[in-house]
Amino acid sequence: MDANLRLNDLLMVGTHNSYKESMPAPLMALLRRADPGRANGIDYGHPPLGQQLDDGARQLEIDVYYDPEGGRFLNPAGLAGAGLTLDRARRAAFEAPGFKVMHAQDVDVFSGCTRLVDCLGLIRRWSREHPDHAPLLLMFNAKTDPSPLPQGTAALPFDAAAWDALDREVRSIFPPGALITPDDVQGAYPTLREAVLAGAWPTLGQARGKVLFALDEGPEKTAAYRGARGSLDGRAFFINTDEASPAAAYLTLNDPVADGPRIRAAVQAGFIVRTRADADTVEARVNDVRRRDAALASGAQYVSTDYMRPDGRFAGGYQARLPGQAAAVCNPVRAAGRCGDAGIERIVSARPGH
Image (tube, rainbow, N blue to C red; front, side, top):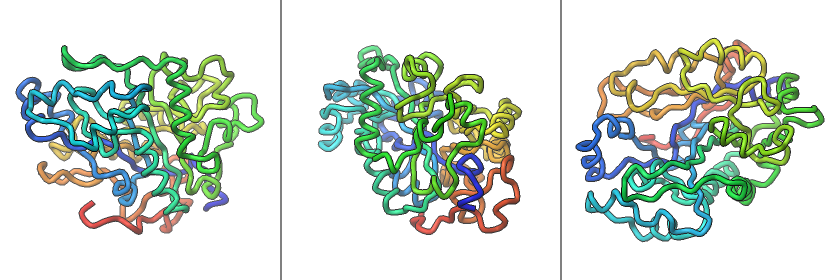
């Protein structure tokens, strides 16, 4: 399998907003009084990144805020109303220069790792300890939103300096031998798209123990990140783009029901796709598995969920994960039946309760 399967012949499950901790009860209660619908949508959290990887997550998602001088998000406006303050360790992390990781500034700020370099360091350490793992996809959202609160702090824009700094932070933690980059896939082909359509993704054996990064953003931000490059020359991230772009290799198609035919066609052509099994806690609250089952059957190589394990508050035990103890299996569209019962990677170090 290591020689005859390629990275895009796999199916794996991962987590959405992987860094996110559950919001403290006083803050959630305040938000629920103000906006019950929004409160429901963000009423979830994840264990530490290492535990998620132990449990078989092979895709993680990280939201980043540009903070080159440090301290920009040090005093979240929403916490005061709930009678909360940041602990000393979080304050120190917010004070330091560099990208910050959180869901929404001023409100949903509690992350398992506040600094991006700390999140990346945790993932790198786990990867080194598990050198045969299936390839990890690290998806990023580059946050530029205004604060959800009138008195809050707006995010900084991602300008050329910010994109370059993001690449540098990634490469400061992951050396070239640990990465799968657009240049690695493109090789001598004229464009990244041509390489992908020609089947140039690395083999499973070449991809084991490595990480690829993808920028999950719309056309404006992905174009800014790409700049004047023909494809993604020298960049650390693949970008979410349409199938016709010279830089096409990765697509975010989050609705496996409505986008099902497009996902299947893209995967058959050679692209890598990420989709979502659930969103905004909707499916988990009523144990609705239709979207999850569509996602797992769609051909998307990476299926994202907020529920690799059930939330005990919700009846029905909704979860989204691969059967048995598998962290990776053959892709149902590209490689159905080629793995037999062996699978590609077994979970061997899942911690009890996770």
